[in-house]
Length: 140
Figure 1 (cartoon, rainbow, N blue to C red):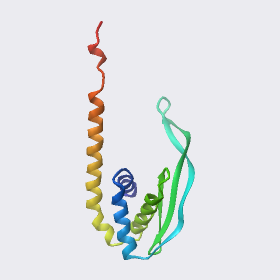
Figure 2 (figure 1 turned 90 degrees about the vertical axis):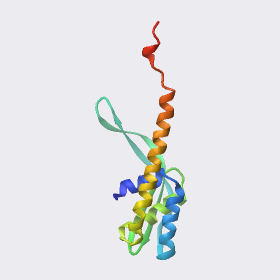
Figure 3 (figure 1 turned 180 degrees about the vertical axis):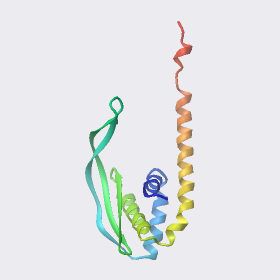
Figure 4 (figure 1 turned 135 degrees about the vertical axis):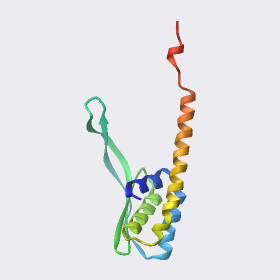
């Protein structure tokens, strides 16, 4: 599983999943926090639809953490003030970079979490469509 997909699942899904995966690594391996969770600002890009060009919409608050597991450094970067999740993401990222055997067992859990996220999105979208107004039926 690619890094972007994995991180998206861990961020959008239940935070307890990231916590449990990180705990597996911290109990079985020595890890070191290189950079403790810290706050920062980053510029957020947006695509302008008419010209299809990128521009910066403004700054967004982020939490960043760096951790090391088996001489591999992982980064946890998330919007908002979420110290624990950022730390968990860094540990999980380092575990994948170190190619630890535990990471191979995680794919099923991540796929199940991704399916749950998709179900929640579909349900929310269905609720929105129920309130959608059809202006064609509003003839005068």
